[in-house]
Image 1 (cartoon, rainbow, N blue to C red):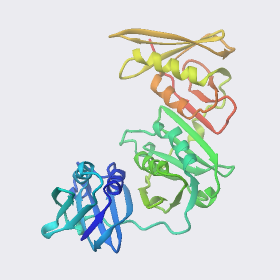
Image 2 (cartoon, rainbow, N blue to C red; image 1 turned 90 degrees about the horizontal axis):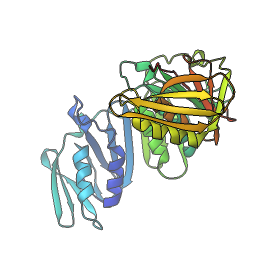
Image 3 (cartoon, one colour; image 1 turned 45 degrees about the vertical axis):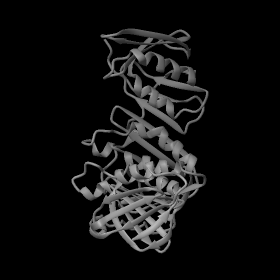
Image 4 (cartoon, helix red, strand yellow; image 1 turned 45 degrees about the horizontal axis):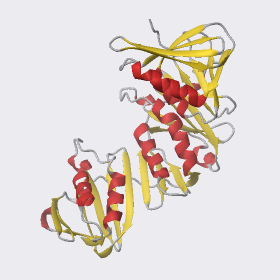
Length: 371
């Protein structure tokens, strides 16, 4: 294997696969990235067995071959190589690679390419183009609601399904809160016509990062085991979670008659200020509704307390409800209207947070007891 490549192009490719390479995996080869040269194309692959990323990069002066190199160390080398000089990489005996640029020379130990896991197949059928900005917007609205507890396997991902109106719907919950968002886009029926896809949190975020890169749409397709995404010269496979997502429709309250309407940005700012004094572990806050105002307060046993007032369009009995402030801040992420509503039943029932007019997004947060 022997090739030359632009330093910035090599750096960009390696930066895009760093998050997937596992540094502490029981399989040492998974901390490596696979480099394969065929013709005038360099293929770079990184995998943790759950997510696979493949990038293609044109090269010159190439000689075919492949080797697995330590992903982090290779990236660190690419980061410090001199600018305005091509990078030359040559495979030597014993899976060693020589890297040179200008007056800089490195010798890096690798592993045989045969030890690297086999690539999964692409799903059959034509991929569905989805607007990149729309996809990122949906993911951002719900992904923080997915559980980070690995023992709650069926809650550790984002559900993708086709709504009754043919929209792309995403749902996530960790058992204490839930977010649901949907938007109309063409091709959803072909992608999700007869199935629901449960993609792991880390995997759906990798696809979102791919969607953010450059302009244009992202192309999606799915098989029984993988969600596949491609954009430009980069492809991502995400292994689906083999678990039953809970029936989220049963969690959505049917009767929350008490409503408070507030300015979305003002509410976010008050939460941000009051959170400075909320206890570190539980992030507890108290929301007190009375008359035409909402008081938000927090108490830290070690440091003191904070309170702030916010105008609210509220008609109902005086109500005091405790929440995890972080959950409320995450819920606001999916609201893009100027005004938002909090719909409640009492001090101990779930609250619904949603835009005042738009019905495509809602978040549900369980209250917490504050003494």
